[in-house]
Length: 298
Image (cartoon, rainbow, N blue to C red; front, side):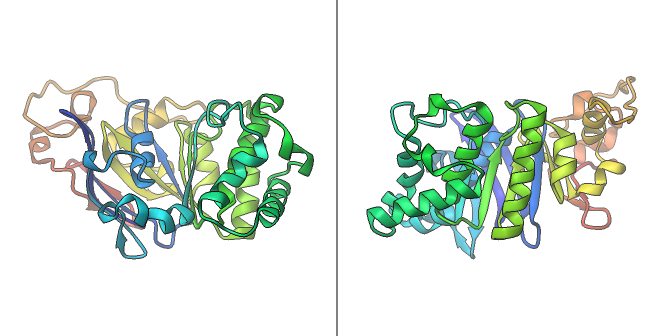
């Protein structure tokens, strides 16, 4: 997948601006940022769950621009790219049996006979550590961790190549989080699935992901291999680490009294602000080892 100059706007409000990145040769990308940074909006844009009129730019998958396709032409893409939503409680219809909810993707894409579809549901339930008997149960009969396993099963049923997990572990207890992350890892090894993993928890992203993309104010601040967390270059990444338990990164409290016109969303909070900030245009600066930043003061 290649994202090129992706913008999302709702009315007069710009939510995402000039988003650019690739997933080529990357197994798992972690997207981090504080609340309101645009993480979920980016996930929904990639999966075309946002009205087409609100999105501009290019989302290329198998060299086909997804944003150029009408709804019926998206069927093949829906099979290749699936999403797991943040809340395992509200992402299931309480009136529909779990088996039927998971089978719905097979029904829509008209895959197999009804008996074959049921068999596929049984198989995917076992893959995520659930039982065949769970097919006829309702969502309220499961715990939060079990529901998240079922949400993973629903995403897996069409054999996707890429799964976007939007805060898939944030509502779970720490012990259950570990179980779900281990499940993601085992599924990736057995099914060769790629992930875009959205989280506000840098520790989880550091444990699970190969690359990290840092969002702030709807724009990318830094993008690169996960080891950039050992020596982050962008001031916002440094601020995130200084706010994360377990990381002893120091972020200066003194902000320079400099006032220039800058398009950088982090400019008002940045300890590195300078006259050069007025040159900011959101473009990447290549540093080293596939590490990119948009800060002009690096």
